[in-house]
Amino acid sequence: MDKNELLSDIAKQISLCKNCELHISRKLSVPGEGPISSRIMFIGEGPGFHENQQGRPFVGAAGKFLEELLENASLKRNEVFITNVVKCRPPGNRDPQEVELEACSQYLDQQIKIIDPDVIVTLGRFSMAKFFGNVKISQIHGQAKMIDGRLIVAMFHPAAALHQPVLKNTLLSDFAKLPDYLNQITKKDEEIKKNKIENLAQKHENTEQPTQLSLF
Image (cartoon, rainbow, N blue to C red; front, side, top):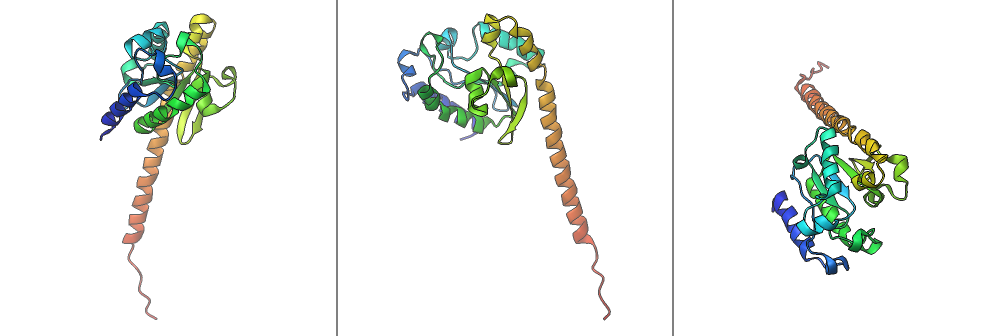
């Protein structure tokens, strides 16, 4: 199967998943969406009411603000992959439980492997914890860290700014850094490619040097 087929297969598995009790109350599972070529993956916490109804991530008020944040970073929604750490709505929009996070982790790990984004942006403390462990989001938001060869950036969840307007400018500022992070990755990849070419050229040049035969 190609990558699109693999993602579709994961989405089908999620729709049939009964690995935790969230399947009991879900209307639709929300596997995530975005192009296979996405350089950035956004990982939220879990579907809300509107997401549960439509089967798509970030389609409520938080989704509208996310699109504003993306625009502020010179990005479009259809250019990025968006998903959550849990794929079914926790009842009453409560926090996802450990057993639910564990049940969904296999699907998220597979999505990351298939898409292989340059940058992962975690939205909220539960997706942040997957990569950063037990730290405070207020201490590391907007900062990028290389983890397993990939740049990970922790950010507040867009919904947080809807409840705490003071966080809106913080999120706008953090999202504005994303183009620079992508440029850093691009430059690094170009340097690696350049070094490889130079090393190959040097190796070829060395093999082409004539060997001076000794007369003695």
